Image (cartoon, rainbow, N blue to C red; front, top):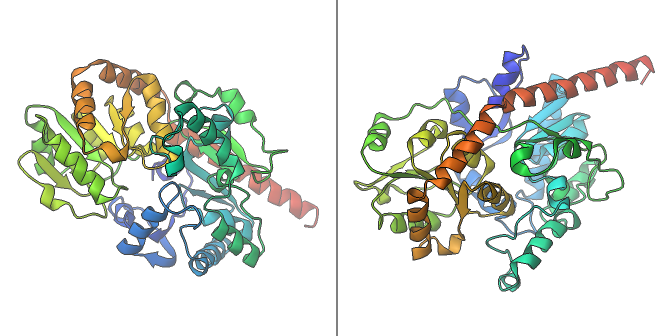
Length: 418
């Protein structure tokens, strides 16, 4: 939605397509016209997708059944052909990796910062929750090395995509690393935070690396996070205005047992807790000090709270940093581990194992982060860095450059009789 608005501001009118699902109503509220492509996802299917996603679900599956995946790929390719779409921009709609090839289009992704120069430099942290029991007692140094080494060397989650790629006659996805990269991957952070110089990022080339599709490019654009066109309910505003510290709990992709454990721990402290939910029903947690709400405009909430507890998705941590609000991360998958650790290195965040959120450890960390002002000062330093960069605008410019390249290529091909 942020990139859509930035493109509009530059005189481009994008088409918006979706499979539907949990957040479809946000497009309606924002007045953004859109098309449903392929079978519409309902709430139950959306919840299953989250449970099976990269880092959460079994690595031997691909988040879709083969028939479902093929249906979406063919529907998207038909849509691209019908509307003359040469460039598709997506967050985590992995079906576009195949449908764009089928339609002769290019795909731009803005997943975040989990990109090759990061793990080629060894910057991925050891996961706070190793995926296999055998790794849990291993030294952190070994698990960190393994995290950085395994990404381009494994085909986790790729099997279904490759079966469907073969059936429709398009290029396979060679690795997990390639699964999360478009033809152009927008790196939605800053060199000062990520730790990779801009020149190194933009000179990265997949040539000679079998783990990647040819032609993949990387470009820094800066932070992109949602500014949802959703009003802050009066009852929430009143809750936030009451005296005393407030913790914003927004782990919307976690199992409800994790959220419940965090709330049970937090109510032992003298804080109020605002809980954001999406697919889970958690209204029974509500009390005088705990408010449970649905989708909230986090960019409005974050500046008014003292601490944000999130799973560590880049959108939530960047919203917190743009608000100068410290983060306690509860990472559920590797990309979230990275996002939280990047802020830990800045002094603006901490992370905790999901398995220990119901223990005294969470209480001790929250108490420390609420009383030690260094976390807030560090978050405000990052806030100043983010404020100087127009992430959506930079993304729009890069996308328009790619579209112009594609148009030029089409003209060149036509002049050659191709």
